[in-house]
Length: 137
Image (tube, rainbow, N blue to C red):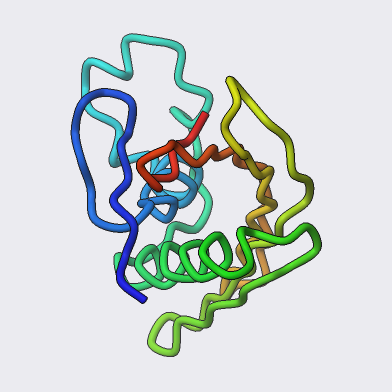
């Protein structure tokens, strides 16, 4: 299967659903935040923990794509990824299904296990647009 285009809601298109960029970039690599964003409320401003490599971000994004494109993201389904070079790993799991504005949506639990033993998790909500694109909501 090919990748599903992802619209960020800001008018820019990215390949795949780009969940890796959101969940790992925002949660694990705060240095990705642009300077103007730092003037806003940034809960990750003082984050000093481990971050993910680009290869890990790509693996997480690919796991999310497989998960959402298989059986429409069945509740309870999970996809794992392992970064061989980094020693990091993680899972994406569909926690629940819901609708928003008539579009099917999924709550995903993202878990990252860092090589140093640090474990981080958070929830992402994504909805499928009529075009087939998944959008983070």
